[in-house]
Image (cartoon, rainbow, N blue to C red; front, side, top):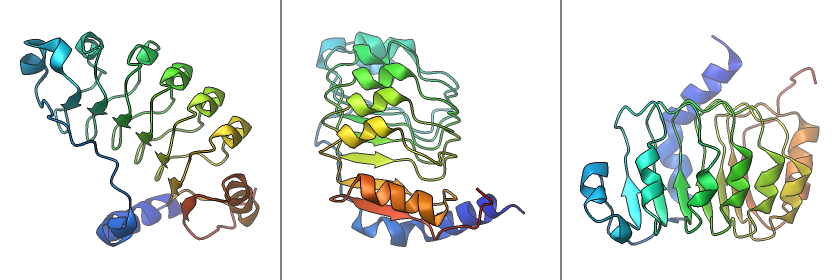
Length: 197
């Protein structure tokens, strides 16, 4: 069993304990849990939760909800985020945890209102340079991905106060680079590895 799988297994077993201190960024909004119901009154949809729906693609109907502030697509099988994601310009909370994402569209940087982004437990290998445009981002979860370096553009994320990179194999030097980048943020990292880098 690989070291990455062992670390992820450990994380899953102890996630309840680790998440105790995690801030709650969920907006207190009336949420729809069905696209069909939401489409009956698209202008009223500010929160949409489609967790565990077996989705393999990002539902294009979501772009009809022009006032959407919170979107939760966690625990699905989505492999890509569309390039026009920036059209959801009122989005403050975006949860994409536990999907099958490998890359992240550059247009993620167009979500200027975004405060919370959860990409945990995917297979993202690199964050796009454009993520540094998310000037209101306060909370970023990228635990259990394959990211080993953050783009320098993220130095502009002055509001970031929570970064979760647990279960990502990092050398001591890589860990130090990340903590230096965000001196005022709470940063969660797994112990350093001797990764041969």
